[in-house]
Amino acid sequence: MSDKFFELKDVESGTTSRLGVSEGSIGPAVVDIGRLYRDHGVFTSDPGFVATASCESKITFIDGEKGVLLYRGYPVDQLAANSSFLEVAYLLLYGELPTASEQSEFAGLIMHHTMINETLLRFFNGFHFNAHPMAMVSGVVGSMSAFYHDSMDIKNPEHREIFAHRIIAKMPTIAAAAYKHSVGQPFVYPRNDLDYCSNLLNMFFAVPCEDYEVDPVAAEALDLLFILHADHEQNCSTSTVRLAGSSGTNPYAAIAAGVSALWGPAHGGANEAVLKMLEQIGDTSQIPKYVARAKDRDDPFRLMGFGHRVYKNFDPRAKIIREMCHKVLTQLGTTDSPMFELALRLEEIALQDEYFVEKKLYPNVDFYSGIIYRALGIPVSMFTVMFAIARAVGWVAHWQEMTADPSTRIGRPRQLYTGPTERDYIAVSERD
Image (tube, rainbow, N blue to C red; front, top):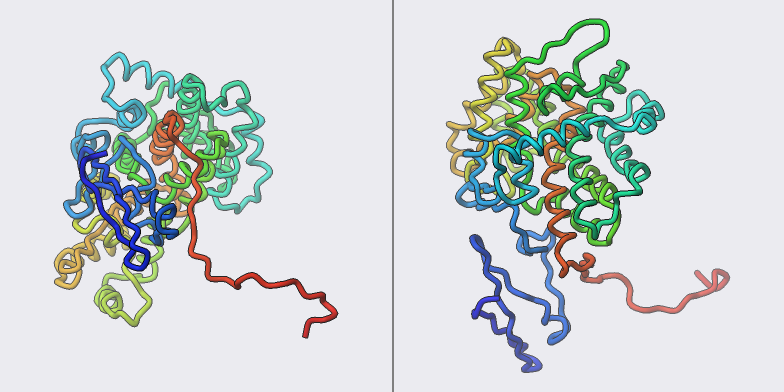
């Protein structure tokens, strides 16, 4: 708490309160409003929590005005250029970049915990053949709590670390099993001799009847996407994990809650919406018409994958992923696809159109990630699942931070009640 404070005076009663101010290492300070109800009998209202700090965290920082994203203080562009997803996972979990020996040990732990219990694997046979993969992932992640009774004491640091390793290691296996079930192919077991993303691609696309060789460009692209999606401060799904976890529930239930929150089209489903928009536009000749519609306030059509709620400048992740998007399309030989031609032309027009430039509606990470996933052969229904694999690292880091903090209290938002005032019950025979 700094020496600064806000003084609030109730003009009607004359009551005055001093609201303390806490300052972080960077970013806006926060005002402690805990005294408002006690001193003045009022709550604050902030729908969508657009100006409310729900917690104190040391993990990720965003400056939306400047287009800055830091993981534990490291700019995401530096990590994307020099690091790997598992190294970033270590950074988010433990607060520092690992030494060579620490990185080797951590990667070994993750890659040797990739298998899931056979009974858990058979759960997938209980899902309908066309069930959405996110429904399967959410259900199976929640079911993991039925398999690890011996290591779910959330007050035990060793148990929290075991849980972290298990989730990060097993999420790709669960995701791949959901995909294989949806296409009616046999499950493919993980291979510990492959790196994290190559293993995932192998579980997705290998089949027993022939050899499958992972394309290094595809693995590189996936690793970059996972780095960029690993964490994003107090977003909807991360806040959901924290809120669920604040009750003391088991960690698998908290992560399953995060998966469910991510499933929403306004959150993790945004890159899926980009592909649907491109399909709606259909052809490059139709772009001017749809751009005009997007500018029309009375038209419900919107260009998906442009602009961002937090970033008021260019999404820093989009700058990084744009180059990889073009590399993937070139090296995987998919630039002749009408869908990709359409996406690239739309990107070009939007980056030059005064309307979009003035409103800073630049292509965001969802615009490019959907195109890359499509180029890698990953179906649209799996896009949000891929997001969940990466974001699970951030969820776990925030859950660990919250659980280890002795000052954590169960989340309990308040409300502005606008329903009926108190009234007496009337017997049904006496009601008009």
